Image (tube, rainbow, N blue to C red; front, side, top):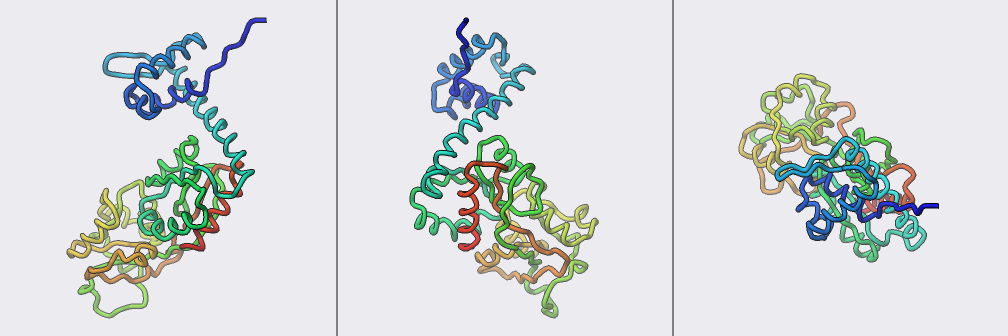
Length: 300
């Protein structure tokens, strides 16, 4: 009976890295090997399975259709291999070993400074690798196995995940202080000037949560979308260029300190976003993630 030769995990890692980066040099850097080592490993893989996976030219790296399908399958195989280690870690001490967590930009600067000291103190064996990115890329990385869990705001369609809600984060309307005539207890959605509303660009779920809470379709068409950060938008409001909507966690973190901006709760139905920790369904580290969610909720 002829021997069967199977691709190695290292070869599959090289293939996935090349698909991710589209460049041999950058893929090699991501794998911490030389370009010649990565290229040789991929040629060995192609020889092993008897098909061409990548068309090589001077300027372009182009995957064949079969190469794309095999790379996608390789990504799933690598994720399953990672979960073997996860199973072993889950059987040991809670919240230990490496964990990769993505956090969306409208949460990271306001929540992480409060939770990281406690995690370092209570779980010194946990090596938490953080990545700040919008909800869409974070959920994609989660399903591709490149991150283990995501700290994000719901509602958001993140695919087949388990979600552990942490707390509600109320939405506020922020505007220059000198524009307020009579201080109301809350700011009605009907009073928002769509021509002066400043929001984050598409891809940031806070924008969608704010617009959905207002229930005014014309806001989506008229609001100015800015591809920056909440801190930058606050500076624009402070300079009298408009108004915006901010989450309560940003206010509690002092984002309006040393500004001439007033914030009032948004008076609208469902004027909150739900902060949650999500992970892939049936993950062997579910107990770890639920414990992490409990710690995050208590620290926040």
